[in-house]
Image (cartoon, rainbow, N blue to C red):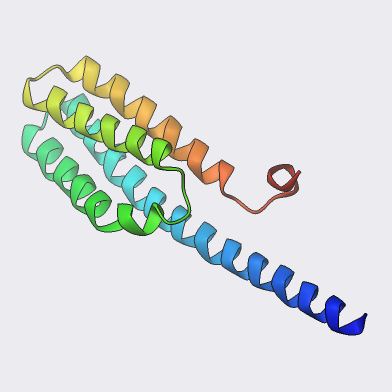
Length: 127
């Protein structure tokens, strides 16, 4: 009986540790992307094209580096949504549809916050 309790305890501790690690990684990546998307939004508001293009390229670069790691523990559907809206922002900036780019930015930020909330270790996510 003690042996089973020890094994179950070790498994639970490993799950909690892995959840903490993945949660920190998710928050770090998503916060970095959100920061650059905020700079893209500032560039749109003042219509600084160089700033917009530079920052959206940084977002795409970060996303391309980190999406494979994130896909290990986040649903692919959610990651595809983020990628789709990042692409949508980039396309709208290229064709100078800034109002649509802001809408896509807002949606992308909403999805990112949803992902962060969904994969955070909390009682509501456990039950």
